[in-house]
Image 1: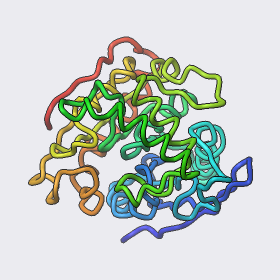
Image 2: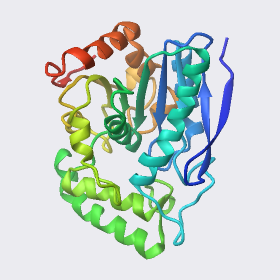
Image 3: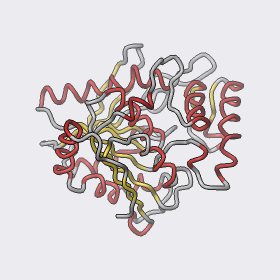
Image 4: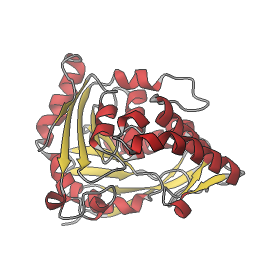
Length: 308
């Protein structure tokens, strides 16, 4: 029986409002906060949420500020960046999970995401340690230009300078016109591009060493790369996992035959069964092992890359 889809109204400390889409089984084994790719509304991840829910995972689909059900839209008069997402939006979604624990009993928490969502899942987990001892990452990686294969890597520094300029000139980045994201806040594009150029996560207006916080994370990360995904190649994911040296990391590369869909950046969203299988493999064992190791064995967890 399919679990009911329940949208939960969320209001952030600064007044921003959105709906958190929840898929919660009768007896959840874990709770997952899932962060979308840039420009993708939360509702598009419902096939993944249903697949994970059928495997006993309660899924909470976060909505990006400015997208989908969000009460805001990026414009010349309205901008934001990583700071607002990290300080206000993600903690508000996390409170919904805490309320579910309070009413239904506590279970382990996981945070994960797709593309930009996977990156900010790592950053948020670092700031919120030890709330999240598990990371599930799909088709993501650091945007740092040196982590991409040639010849793409030579073009990326130009992209990371051009898109912030374009967003500043237009008041927001109209991503649908150029095939990259949606209508994106210029502050968000500034923060993203800065990582692409310098390989350090930072949020304008937030005086914190985000990379240092990520480096202290302990637990377990399961990462999935799609073999034909030029937007998030294996080398980019490996560079992101290298920022988590105390996590036990497993990297899986999935092909089109394994997915039953093209193995690119987005097609898996409509055919998520293979990713759900990877994420949920030995779920109970890995969750408890990750929590135990986070407390007791912080130094024996170098990332491991390999095919399933």
